[in-house]
Length: 308
Image (cartoon, helix red, strand yellow):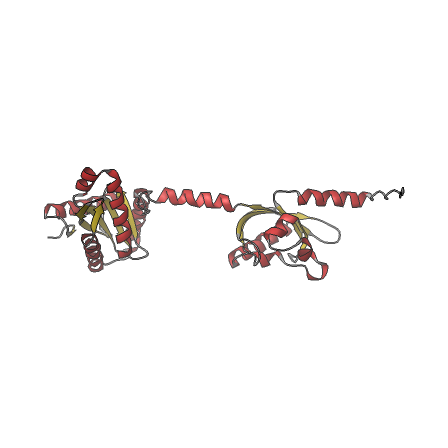
């Protein structure tokens, strides 16, 4: 039996081994880069995120710059900017997008701090995966702006955008138009077939008609069977054409529920948003009033506020 004892590690080797064990057990990516932004140290987790090995990132003759792994020029420029701030003595924390060729894309939060050494400055970074957090925030943001039933914008977002268009009409003399769309005799479907049928009708109408407006326009469900459309930078002639296409699209649809078939139509009120408009609420009320006139004239028609 070999009874020779292993030589005890030096204090420096012991501390290096301890440090390596610590950073490799961390739940965040950890790296150290030089003033050229090339890797000197990368822990196991970060290397895996980047689709590399620790050795490939830090090999002495071919150290890889960290900026290679960012997914877009904005992220690369942001890292360079914050890196220079850190070299100037200011710590930095920011979010950017990693998109390595061999790893999965992910959003990360990076914290940078400078380490002053006699041989030159190094920067240590901690990388936290925030992909799930950003997805949850994006989902919450979407939910706050959209109608759950139809996927269209909701009334709150519609009114916010209406205020913006009202302000641009006042300050820039821009011309916009509001369409107020109310389904005709929706109550018949709701009362005879139930709320599930009514909800499905609203979903199908939203899916059928939202392509009738331009990409930069706002199409929203205002509540019940009422919808609103904001036509940005739109002359009235074009707005009336869009309103007519919406009316025709709805009128050309037949809603089927179980063994029943319903003809569908809509009345549409139209009101200009101009420098002369009194307020966003006034514009919305005028479009609603025009829609009411359209219904009184027999439904399934477009009515301009103030028109015949």
